[in-house]
Length: 182
Image (cartoon, rainbow, N blue to C red; front, side, top):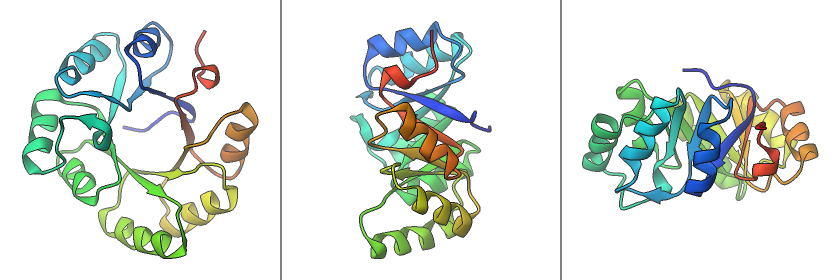
């Protein structure tokens, strides 16, 4: 599965999730929800022709171990996952599910260590946070050869444009005013 270019809508509330179901958006990123609601939300999104990416680190009640991931992949069946954890990315790749690895730009050591890990795990996309540092977007894209999603602290249309101009494939944001919906 290839993600569309531009803005990716990331939701934290059921209200915004419902609004996206009625929009032209292809992809919905589920940031925060409870495990008990997750299967229902994914089924509902599929019914509306939407592709769902689940941020596994933020799902309350989901443990990112082999058993939690088995449940996620076999029972919930999202189109993709987002995680900071390499074991989640490796498992997603094994199950032919889109894998987005989150990378927090904390310092040079963390960057170097994470780039080395991602060269091994080969996620489908890398989400770089914060997404407001254009020079790192282009550097990481060049180093890994993996499409970049810029996320975190994206607040304005100018932020979106800056990240895309730096080479990001897409920008993820929970700011509804930046989503491309009517």
